Image (cartoon, rainbow, N blue to C red; front, side, top):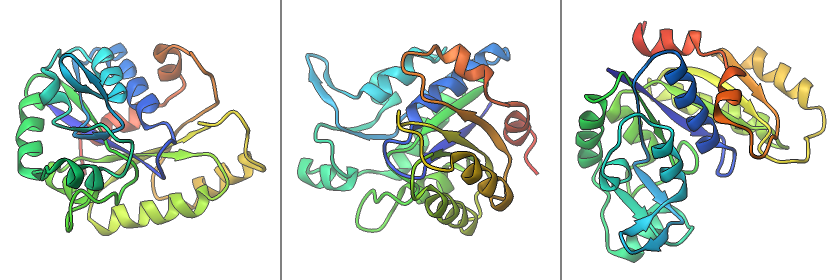
Length: 232
């Protein structure tokens, strides 16, 4: 019973896409999977309440069928920074509550994939950030690098901040989230391979509509599983 946290170099870099692919890959490896999206903004009003598309995609790829409020305890309608959305809704996000719900989910599965919102240091309130939540959960991190101009700086700064918190970066994934390929993409990937202190788990091209099983086959999950189940 363990898990990992998926963060990204920015918003819109493919965290949900990667998280779903990881769930598909872990299921293919024979593991019972669960997922969690602790915080989400940009949700739709439904007869059952607010629902976030990213959280619903994670639920569809998970073996454990959870109450929506457990899967995504804090969800907000406007597509803005979560802490601002929470302020507008009069809600205070409680890290202790998220931690308790995560432990409940973790107990039902072999592995739980937790997807962040935005980037590594997205604020959750006036003091706490997404990084503080990860430290509390005690999970290794998979870093999704959106391959676009600026990604070298964003990736290195994010990895440096993660390590400064004493959190392990279990691996990183180069994701071509946009249809337009960045200039010198291969050279940029090679640069990050040399500078990031963690293994490259895969390079994904922009394939709209591709199956998660196919994406999962493009990822090297062996080192990732070792990091999750046999931490140093």
